[in-house]
Image 1 (cartoon, chains in turn purple, cyan):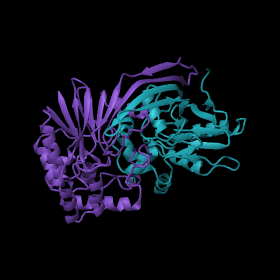
Image 2 (image 1 turned 30 degrees about the vertical axis):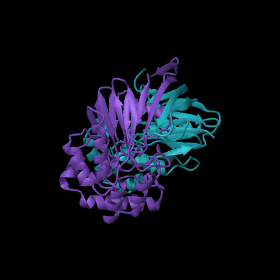
Image 3 (image 1 turned 180 degrees about the vertical axis):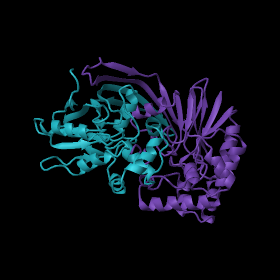
Length: 273
Length: 240
């Protein structure tokens, strides 16, 4: 079975339709979407309506959650006051134009979707706001996969696609309880697990403006990272026309993050993420 | 440095007094007294415990106190904290305790609870009531070692002291290895290797829940020596 997994469309209708066309050419059996249908981009209603109309199983992204529940990302989500100001401006704009039925659709999206030995989520199984970066401690990444009960965990949120294979994991531990007895040392081992990040359709940050997503062949256990050119200038123009912060258009045109990097993806904060 | 680490007094002033007596007779002398939350249990008796903690007698250590599940729930009842998704604490204690918290905890005490820290990060140690994820999470020795490692590694600590379970336990992650590879659009495969050294998760016990028997923990961060103390208190009745 061939799956296409996409994430972080961010109101970029042009990128979404181009990626859907590309998926069409690869004889894919099923498409999954990892959320962040809205935010940053100029067409949140259109993007969400299209994903919903195609009946694509979709998890809730951090932007989708914030449009439903109100902006409740912790202060530490923003690396600078400037980034916070821009993020809030985009939130206010999106919140204002989003249609009630689209908000209801975003509200019922799940945090995690399970299918056989695969799990799909936006950030991590613990939170839409947690970044599973490729350099995250391997044991922590393994814990996130195992917490879903799956062998392969698909995620997004970082906007940069990758395939991470976690192999040969072992951990020795012992327990001493109040009776004073120490249990003999035990060993915990796991089979190979994978984290596959689908990148971003509508706001890529891998250094080029092209949309990214992944194709996964479950029979061959083969992952293909796809990079697709689209007319990003159209979306950039729409961002400026709608009065959204111009930096979003600059970022889209360059495919890079600008002072928005999460410094500490495993930080301790009030949200518990 | 010699730390005494307590949790879960739960309104039992007699138990707290007994533990304090035990703490003050330790040699080497205890230099720091940490209380990892759950001072109260929703009953009016909790107020005397809070008062005693906030006003130590002359010559006693001033306790460093962080929030426990009871204090957090009290703040939620008063609308000072958002409702968590985790409702395990209410299920565990019963819905009636919400009313008890409202009725029995004075407004001024609630205000004091709101100023308590989530936990303490001292040297390479994290001291919290629940876990690094939140006050309501209960860390026990039967959890997956990966979950326990995660709660430690999130904060960059090597020692995690917690009290929510009420148990005294020392969970040692002795040795771990993991190999990984990462492939991106621009790089074929990058190899990664991870090792886990000596790390501990420590359940510090519970002072007030069990009548006539309190448990707490002594720890020396310089020598890494850990001692679980059991303090029996109260008069024996009958001929036993």
